[in-house]
Image 1 (tube, rainbow, N blue to C red):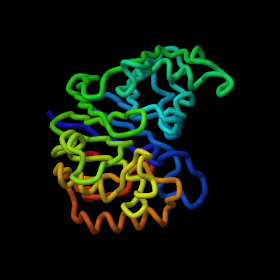
Image 2 (image 1 turned 90 degrees about the vertical axis):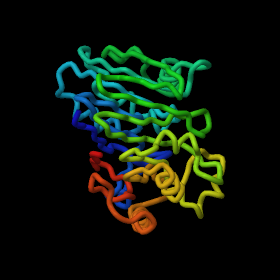
Image 3 (image 1 turned 180 degrees about the horizontal axis):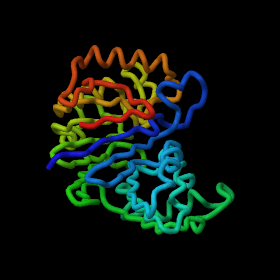
Image 4 (image 1 turned 30 degrees about the vertical axis):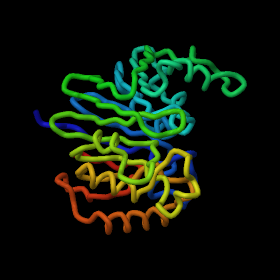
Length: 283
């Protein structure tokens, strides 16, 4: 079966959204990806990038969509209540999380997000048909015919889930937020990403910066290269840019990453590239 698998980046920033001319080329919205596979739309994370994505979907009749969370830290969920399809009665929206059960439930986390005095309205404001689905990281999900999601736990405070989206013999891996432990690359991540066409990887820091942020739950672009090489990944996409890393800094990261991992993958993409808002990659 031919693959129509592709990913579009709506938010690539980590920790907090950034505005200003120094963030124009790479973008200032926090994490949000739109994956199309087998005629279905799968959204990953609900950072501030979810708002403009939702605006583009408002004209669709009876939208049926899935949103998968890596985790529920604020920068990955703060766009949820601004997702306009939630306010159309005919729409169906399924929300998935693999890092909470059995202790917590996703529905309760969203209720707390929208709790006074932190928020002016409650979960009842959503009029679409919303389903909350908790699973355990490590399970395999099948959200649509011919589409398989393999999952794995990541090393992050309060837990996180990595995803491998497979369709038509192609694979995209989404690995954020995760912290490497030193030594060889994380074997869980390497196995999940083995022979993937594209790996989107938490590259918040550089190796030089990382010692000052040990324990914060994030990795480096250099570790991304080590993981990509160990897993025989086609294209590494450097993702979850630190708020202090402006366009000029990210230009330097891309130059250095492409020097360290030169050439192009089978899909014609560079073997290392920095994520930009609006960028589309098809394996």
